[in-house]
Image (cartoon, rainbow, N blue to C red):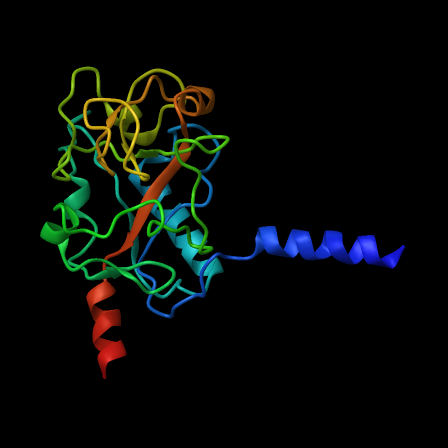
Length: 224
């Protein structure tokens, strides 16, 4: 009777284990889970806090984490560009692989952004097109160059406070699918709505990217 129990336990461990060994230089990840309230992330402040909480749980709480999210001009507040809030780079994933050297590199064809390299803070790959369920729609609110999306109807889901009406630009972390720019990691198309079911209905789950703004300081310490 003990043998089946051991096999089950080993299977559970295999599922829960990261696909890659953790590197001490992680400065970029895709969230393994969203807050669970659709695109209502509690605004930029709430989204940043979620990044910090996830990073802290993996031993990277000493870095300054920011969500890769843009916001539109609203209520007297100026628009915010995702590219302007993530620091200067370079950024590395959970496994220590270089993602991009700087902001310009991140938004170029040279960036190392694929389904295999865009890992969660747990070192896991996120489901993409062809997986069940598909979760490749990643919230960004951005255009391809990292500035706020100017697409018609886009309001970044009321600047990340709506779980019902509105729309937000999403990217495809697996670099495939439909939309105006199907291979874009940060600006493939707009969401159908802002609720959790809306996001899931078009291949998302409320995930987004997190970057350490002080990744360059971490890099300098590593080289010493």
